Image (cartoon, rainbow, N blue to C red; front, side, top):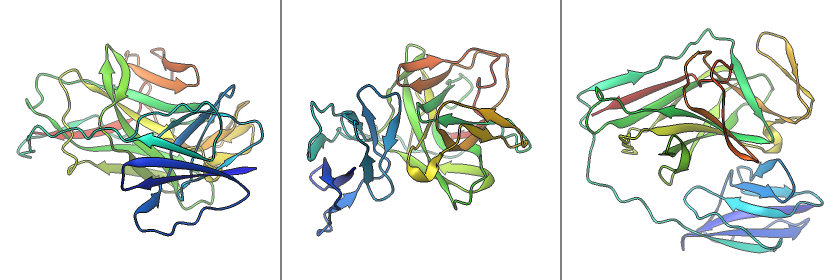
Length: 286
């Protein structure tokens, strides 16, 4: 078995090491591990993430097809190697707009008593919900916070998930909006998770954007069963490994432009399905 280590250096490059049953020692303060970088493989429907210390175990037969990390260009290696370097993306320049915080608007509402929680498998990584811009919003609308509900029942003290924003590309998710990941550490049981974006100066564009949650596939987040225990005590069967974290959804008859990312790419969820709207609460201001 191989172990992979993703390291970020101050020269804006990402280095991936693969060594047989050995660790990489970090001897300099100029290098730090990259957590939750995403790695996909040829001929496999699943993906994996590096852990909190930037480590990832390669199983026999896994040939890396793509390495991605927010803030870096995607890398497509031809062969498994001991070292990879990813090129950093250019930072998005600020237009000089600063929030005034005189007018605040709340979009959506958290249904704290809901039992409609759903998770993901090791083949489905990201689920996104469209957030439109409306004429009654401030001309320059800053996203102040995004909140959602989560649930998990293992003895783990926390379960991580990544909040990401995507551009609107003709009605479907496009490129990442920004160069920053927002890692949320969800607590056991039912938990309210509020992501504070007040210092990020993120503007809601006129064409709207997609808010996404990406499940992290590391040993600590995977259930090794072919079923998942629902919050109401029932069990749902699955042929895939379940990632042990559920988020709350709303059941709606509207087309909310909700998309799911799998190994086959983005797929739009059908209206009237139970996975038709993530229960987000979003605060914007001028």
